[in-house]
Length: 304
Image 1 (cartoon, rainbow, N blue to C red):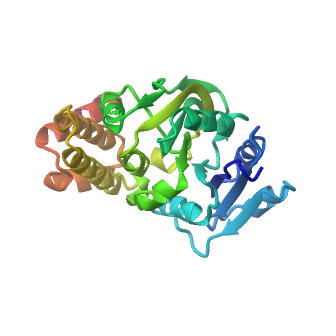
Image 2 (image 1 turned 45 degrees about the vertical axis):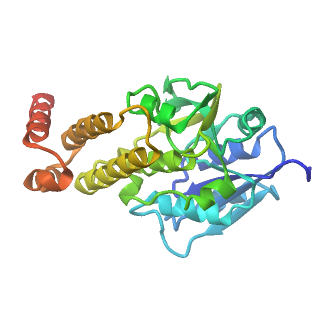
Image 3 (image 1 turned 135 degrees about the horizontal axis):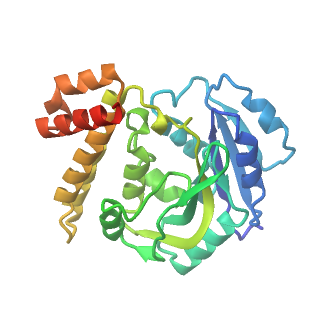
């Protein structure tokens, strides 16, 4: 086993409803040289009892001294990264699931593309009751960051944070996961930064299951004004990356359009107080009156 790379599967744990299933999927990997690091982010639920149901020496259980992820889950992602010892690092959310050969297959991908620091699996989406509701678009075996971003911002790619296996030394060198309020765009911006030098290698197999349970912080419509500001920061930092890297494709107008479409969607979903905060200061959110009117009209149509 010593000549086989250690792989860390980290679970930032807060919700327990599906934690047993997530942890079981991590421990059931066909590739054996793994550690599973469960980081309890000061949950009010009994995370320790769920973890205690497994008698497996590969588990390391840790409890944060304070709730790091309350306003930014990426802070707890970085705590998971700090505790990891593996050459490769996977971040499995506490309600998502890996197929048994997730690690083994992505290590095969790494052998085909040894320069890559970012490896990716296909994704199946399920709802809170476990019913399949869709899949993410397939990716080619390898793509540069420019290719990936071009397709991503043209809606030909989707991603969460859990379908990736990352070379730990490379993502530590990159500064870890990007911190943004409520991690609003942190998953995307982090992967862009990690893949900047050596691109993304993927398997066409769908080996990760993302649960859209409605309990995710990204599904929470509270504080939409703060989230929209964070989303603006994500887009601006992505624009800076595009300028710095000198991409052949002109992504800047695409990013601008992407942001404005997202801004309208966020305003449609916002509660009344957050919407007022946005509408009172549209320039602060880099939106014009056209975006505001479009959102208000859409809200009106949806309510009638």
